[in-house]
Length: 528
Ligand SMILES: Cc1cc2nc3c(=O)[nH]c(=O)nc-3n(C[C@H](O)[C@H](O)[C@H](O)COP(=O)(O)O)c2cc1C
Image 1 (cartoon, rainbow, N blue to C red):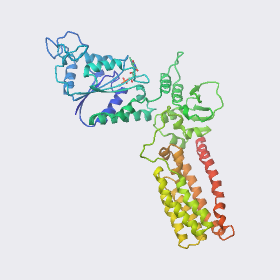
Image 2: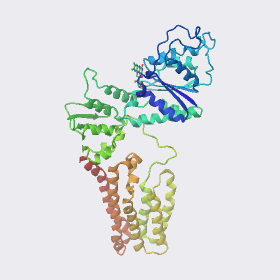
Image 3: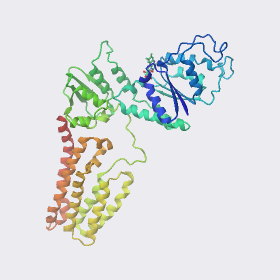
Image 4: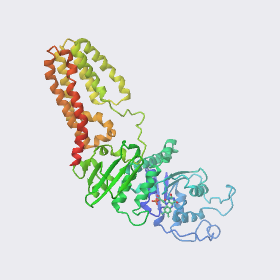
């Protein structure tokens, strides 16, 4: 396929629209390609002399880069028009280019169109056109009527593919790679589907979705200019902080207002973000008592926002400190996602794990086993056998499987006559060994389960989350490695049948410790 790309943005290679066009072309795959960057070409305005129709048919009297551009148009199978929306229409350079395409038409009047027209000098019928454009308003809807009218005449109504995207300026903001990257991925898919025949409804719908809700985008856009509505320049750090505040997702409001203080230590600037049920606001004076305070060099925070360094790594390395309530940091992505709809888990993927699946067979053995060895073991095996039935709606971990195996072995041994006094301590030991072993694995056991509350798989890339979980997994491992000692003695006393109940006291205390530690420890690290 021979593809001609006409870049009509005066910004040339810095064009926002060109990012979409590049993604589309990437999706289309390999092929012969020619590029026309109009801002770098010498294309003069049409003189209106009609020489290309009468004196020198098909040839323009002007000697400039347009002659070879016309050849490129005739050469191409696919023409990709890439340009920004200017005053609800085309940028001037592209309009000049269209005017200079007159030699491609014949002078005679054609009856093909209601409003009149000219037949083409060449057979253009096999060519496919793609029109890609970004604009500065929050939506493309209602802004492209002028452009559509032009391309309806140029290519024929419904005879070309369009990707019109609002919020175009966001494509150059490196602090927003997530959302724009997502959109570009859909544009790439559109390119793939276009090359294969046509763009699917699903992809159209994705391309039709706003990058950010209107109010978020407009607040960000207003803050980005670095000038105040009342006149005068805005401090760069204030402008940046306002854009950050604009990304606040009010549906994450936790039931009480948050005052997030940003203390940029290297430039001596301090701002407070007031995050409420109604939205966000940046305060520059009359500061209140903060809920959470981030002390950071401005350069570090900018680098984190731009994705140049990881926020979690920077915290572990002590590049910034967090004071006050740490829970905001743990849920940062849901607070500052620009009000994006929560990502739906793909239908076929069972996304969350459940520690109950792991615990229930063990608890059954530990409670029922001491009461009646044989029946306790039998019930345990039945419960363990039933566990796979719930896997269909949960993702199972290696520990769910290992656990099922270990607990079944212990119960089988009891059925085959192994004394409960020996089998139960063995079961506790096996359980403790499994936890302790996992401390040395890349992902400690508890992380597999607690990640559900912290952005799923994303949490596994967070060193602080992993370290917290490694410590907790070790604590639980040690507890269960020690439990067999007193269990063995307890099973020899009159309290034997109460062993399950007695042995749940320490885990309960450990549960309380866990709930406290997983908040306290990250906050302690963050305080530096
Ligand atoms: C002179 C001028 C006129 C513009 N007119 C409009 C407009 O009518 N509607 C709109 O939504 N954006 C308008 N914009 C914003 C651009 O369309 C937007 O910034 C676009 O993303 C720029 O794309 P580019 O980087 O590919 O050139 C205008 C920009 C300029 C400089």
